[in-house]
Amino acid sequence: MYASGIDWEKTKGAVWRVHAKCLKPLVDFSALPLEKLLGIDRQKAALIQNTEQFIAGAAANHVLLWGSRGTGKSSLIRALLGHYFAAGLRVIEIPRESLSWLPEISDELRLLPYRFIIFCDDLSFETGESSYKGLKSIMEGSLETPPENIRVYATSNRRHLVPEYMTDNQQVSVGERGELHLSDSVEERISLADRFGLSLSFYQGSLDDYLVLVESYFKGYEGDWTLLMQEARRFAQARASYSGRTAQQFFNFKGLSL
Image (cartoon, rainbow, N blue to C red; front, side):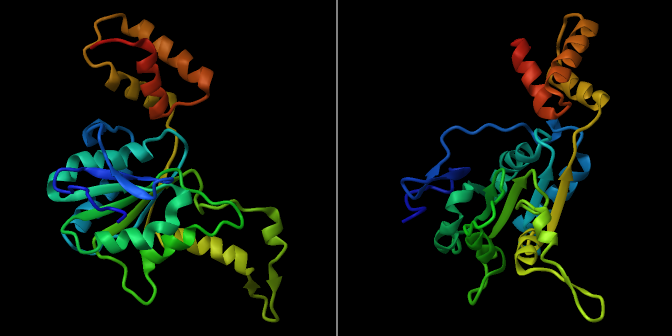
């Protein structure tokens, strides 16, 4: 029902349509090659290793990619799909508000001869939300063992996926022996992020790192490089960001055909 009619042999992946309550196969897909993603070598190597283990049927973790905006978290996951499609990898993107459908979706994917990454982009939860319970069930299971051909890869700006407030600390009490007893709400928040066996942090680089990224976008540029780099600096300073996203936006801003 939710994934019926999709030809997974030809389709790289699918996106969940909230109102239709079904998966829609990707029509247009584009991603930078893995080798074009610069400045995140440590994170890229760890994610590639985990993904290759998953494709091979070996033990592999769910992955949380967290940190600064525009640092390549989502681009890295999209690049995996382009690189490993022929090896049987497929990616399904599901928004936060539809995570409660994951158990039903997994029922249809469980017996298929492909390896599925459930991609949750910009994942975070506000206090009181319960949609993450579907996510937890697919990651650790309940009475039924989680599907071995499904892993969750999520990106977030938050390490623990949920906001933390000073009032949380006010619920901490000290026992007779001096140990701390965290409130149930705090423990629940921490346990969600703990279900991701691999946690990769992303940080904005320096100005020099940013200029290297800019240079990678302008291969074949025949104009004045000194002037181009000056423009690139001003562009980034106006946005207070030296991220890979800013480098790409500067390239788009120039509108050059290289």
